[in-house]
Length: 363
Image (spheres, rainbow, N blue to C red):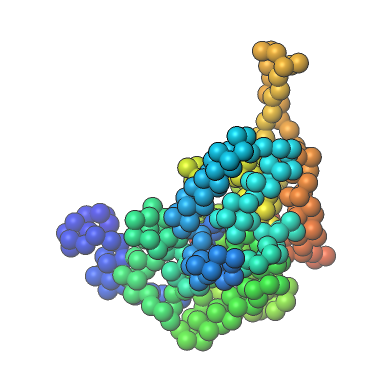
């Protein structure tokens, strides 16, 4: 029906069709992006030319950094006649020394800034429409661009449409501690409610749904269920990982190049994943409810061609053994967080598994 109507009216987008039909926005909406879906910019850097510019995602910076490292290794080999090498510690330092990666990876604690570097989230709708502003690379980096464009077509404006971008590298408790993120989101909800005389809808994409869940739990704990009932109309869950995401296990154990295969090696991808305090936020919870096993392993026998059969493994134990840094983040920021995994006294379920305490949930 929609396709037919679009053809008849010669309109290209659903938002234009809704406007042509005389429909108007009902609720004010705040978009909460997912993992790697908010643009990040440099606030402080040893590279003065990068200050104030986007680093996530600027393909030119990633590629240029990679080329500089390769050139440095080539020149060193030319001068000494030896290739760069050494023990594992030296190799690890070389991996993390890449300029772009050094800006993106947090300190060992999973939330602090590296020395002389500060990277912060871009604010507003342009933080999550396209990650890149370069005309040559902009289009492939779209996140919420088409959703935002259609909502603009349908009549949403600055007074009833916003994006709550955030530093997706941080664990949730540190989002509030460092940036006052949930306090700012609460204030934005109240402002929209006051200006529009209507309750607000929170729209989450991917990990943004976990962020909204955390916010709802945080708001209920600190301001009561009445605040939620008075200000929140509901939640739109797009691609919500309510039970977690198995891809995160792969990212922590074997590395995920997050679409930057041309520039990141697997070792660098592992360094990147381990340097994010937010990665454990998406680890699968209650994996017994998932349709297939999360992690299966098989081993060679005495380095021969004989291969043992696949067997299901507890991915938490594998992460604890292979990635102690990530396991420490899990213990420090998630296990005892009442807005995530620790069960409140008045509930049988942890916050992350509770049904979102809102009047409407659209999936």
